[in-house]
Length: 310
Image (cartoon, rainbow, N blue to C red; front, side, top):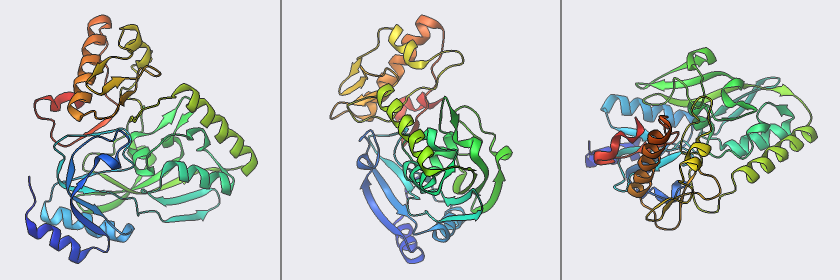
């Protein structure tokens, strides 16, 4: 569904944030791939975002969210409707000791740095994971040492223009998944952390960063892990065992350093990345019977290959 011209004008009149047409999305993603947003909307703060989503529900405008641009493939044709970025929703409160209530637009690396500075433990093992707090909640970002959802007490969720708090149990956190996402928007998160010392937390964060750099040292633009690890297996090991290390489709390539990464060697298109994803899925399934499920999200119209996210 395309928007009519009155939509942009109404948004500019009613919001304090920015509204821009035909904005290239490739520079806003870690893959550096994808076409433009029909309208890119950035609300000025939490209240502006609440007003925006009330308008969207009232008018029936199509929309999707863009966080930090990690774990995301944008279609070459771009994205119709509103692309909403909550990067300015960054309020931060400490309502009680060792509890933080913060906006979904906080970059996760900056939040971890802030918790280290405040001497609040619980997130430092996630150091090096890109993206925003909102994305970390929806995807339940994590490593072997633990995941983001373990620290969530409640989440302010907007659905059909209405906001309400969800408990951690409501969110149904699972491996790289939750009951959030889709038409549900994470706007605010309350985290329960633990008192510690900044020096100890800084050491833990640095250790996590060193481990991540060594394990995922990849030279080209990428979106992180492309596939979820199937139960009892590592996706990268399955891909490597099928002889797919370095496999290419145009400028999209299975990384030679980490086989669960697909890199953009310069001018890769979304179509090339998607073709490579399907090729990997087919080869692994044919050799092992295991169907690799994408961990990344897809924005826009991918035409006949649009079932890659299923």
